Length: 291
Image (cartoon, rainbow, N blue to C red):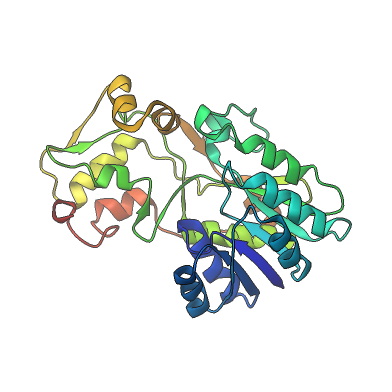
């Protein structure tokens, strides 16, 4: 399949690019500059230099491909990009895989695709783009909603690994759960959604591993020799440190299993749990004190 991919040099998009190429798909990667173009070409993709807001460029690129995966979803660029792709794909039944997010469901101990949406201020903008893709006639629009992504030494867990002086600094008191997914497992889900996702369907990308932030912090302390352990902060302190909107999203208490993606698409995440990798000192590849 010929695929147009956005965000191919980003955290999630890099892994999606690798997965697409490994499974034999031909990828045109939309990138913003020559340096990023070289990176995707070295990986094996065809580079298209431009911006997601360039509707003419996007429509022309979409005319040449069999499907689109949009991992570079932004409040500034989504409307133009989605309109251009849907216009080019109208009536073709071609797949469009859009990126959502687990935070859109708010706090819940059993998040599924049927859970009522309760978007925090930080991601309220996502609703319009998701609705446009899911409701589009004549295309096979799907949304992948990633859990908290880890893997390849990156992800939001770095907020904890990079604040360890005097003990691993938690986010709030650390009692909230983060539902997690490895970035390479998530890439596999994007490709499955492209290949056989149902029209108008959302798939939550969650591994079923739902540690608390305190458990993550304690694992970091154990695995990387932070002798002071962990230290909590108040909600007010977290908001002051990280900004109110970002803090409120990170303080959501979320648990999910990703059961729908497993049952309907055959998705089978295989990565070792984040807590285990941290506790064994395998995640970063070096002591956090040396960073």
